[in-house]
Image (cartoon, rainbow over all chains, first blue to last red; front, side, top):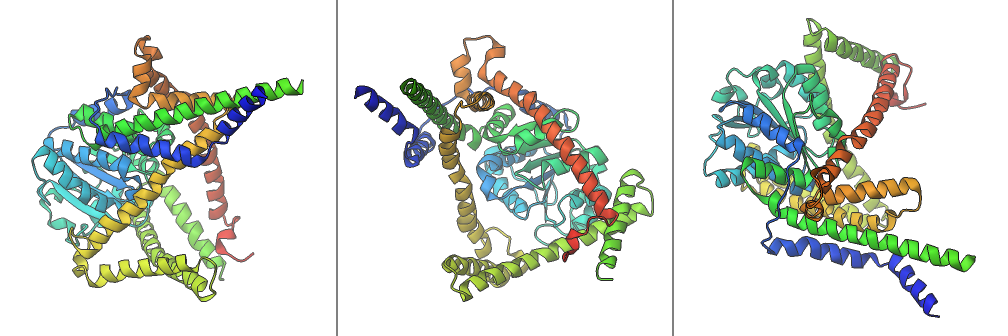
Length: 285
Length: 217
């Protein structure tokens, strides 16, 4: 009778109501938002490589930022955009923003003021920042930019002729760009930038990806991709290495709690699984 | 001719785009630019076709009183609200400027809604992991262990637990090894397979062997 009760307990544990799991995850993610916990976040070679490449660029370098994501991926990618703009402001980079996703340029406009507040300096539009907006055509937009950036984007995000901006004088194609930073949540994104811009036009590329997409771009790391920011962890490492701690570092506490809860649940499920299987096998023999 | 002309266009564009990759000299450079511009124009037009198709499909559902017709009504209403506000009530060409009604709809409605949809994944992934990650077979055990180590290695807790061990046994180092060695090996194998498949399908399209994209039989 006691053994039956025990098997019943493990069985019910294996069939736990998913709403209980949802509740645990909700608490794990939301509670840390109200706590001040400073976790030591170790940095990885992928992120160190990206920051080292950025550090090697001269002050005032011309960088192209392609934001290829929508608000669905904002929690992971937006902190990276904010940090990159903050870093660019500090190094006085000339930033050219584009988007292969329609929402990308809008995300840039949302990230810019946050970076400006953090650094305490503002971009001067047309002098050290310009948003060229979205262009339909996916990877062919990249290919077209290889021959002419002003022809691919004749007007900016706000409808002004690109040729009127002082920072765009002398920009013809990728040969006038020192570094390309891509934030990507899928297609078109980092893979297309590698295939159509790095391999063909020899640009220097660094990328930030959602945790789901990051494993797909790891094979390009090294010669084709000078560093990856993978998911929230990559974003947090980027913030630490650039000295601009922001949202990703803060959100890492919630992610740590959530991962811990999931790992504990997986352990519990496996204990329940083996216990019931052992007891069932014992019962059968 | 309805089939021959599109096939000739596809074949010519395909051949020119392949040649210009290896020989960027004229006239292939110019042809590449022209074809790329055509593609952008066609894709931009396809966005409108997609929008019209959305209205047609949703409109049909409402007309036929399909069981999900209220959702279809919400789709059409949302679409019209964004288009009308964007076109007529947000300063014309400057509809994307911060503070316009269109921009506010994006910031306070569209953005939180899409972020919420993505955030729901965390809950479903947790529930699915609980049910799926069980060491039933040898392969499942390997998958389970890899997931377990990467999940812990990607958060500071992993290193807190293994901080007393030699550095190469720190959870972040192990997660990094999994991502850089077995993951890359598997991904590259998949990529090579996809690339070979893409090459063969592209050649079939260019040579006119594959015609399913033309519709009909």
